[in-house]
Length: 166
Length: 113
Image (cartoon, rainbow over all chains, first blue to last red; front, top):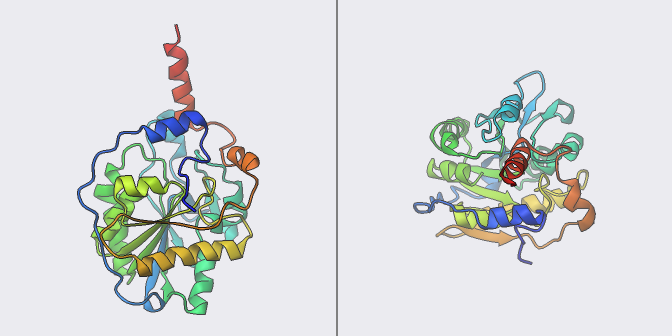
């Protein structure tokens, strides 16, 4: 099947996204896989806007409510042994009920640990990351927070990343 | 998310995005995208459906292992959403409209003569 990217949107948003003008990109970066997946450390990065309760603060949703054209560009860290009960969700653009029931719908940490145990990947990274996906301007991601997380992952021995937007 | 994939890839990491809107992987130049025709908030599928979550993840990792440049490379996950379309086209939305949707509605009201 070929996925219809607009299937779940109401007609007004469908038109908005389909007609959106995007700046042309300059080439597509490409890093070949360094070794077989069964020997690699893989990290998860989601834009579900989640954090570990009482360890790091939630994203700044209060400011987004005051400034609807701004989205918090920072990130939160999620350890590989994070438990469901520690997950705090607050993304203002999706319903978070299922994420609060089973974080794996958008951050498949427990499925990755199973794949690690089965040898499908070498190892799930010690640290994984959440951003918040509502970003009218991705400049801060590209200039500051993206390179920061890339550096942290590289320092942790990560060689591949599975990204899960919501 | 596509912007982050590009930053990570340029920094020497191999990336794959599991996306409900794979057309934007193409339009924004993400290296590898697995499209899933799932409602927003659910790139891996339904809560508690561990088998489906694993199949999506394995498809993404398979793409990571197989894809050859040049990007953007886009593949489509073969399985349809297991839930009811009419229920889920509403169920993925937040309980109250997001701030920007509220703002857009206010702007539209102001423009009305």
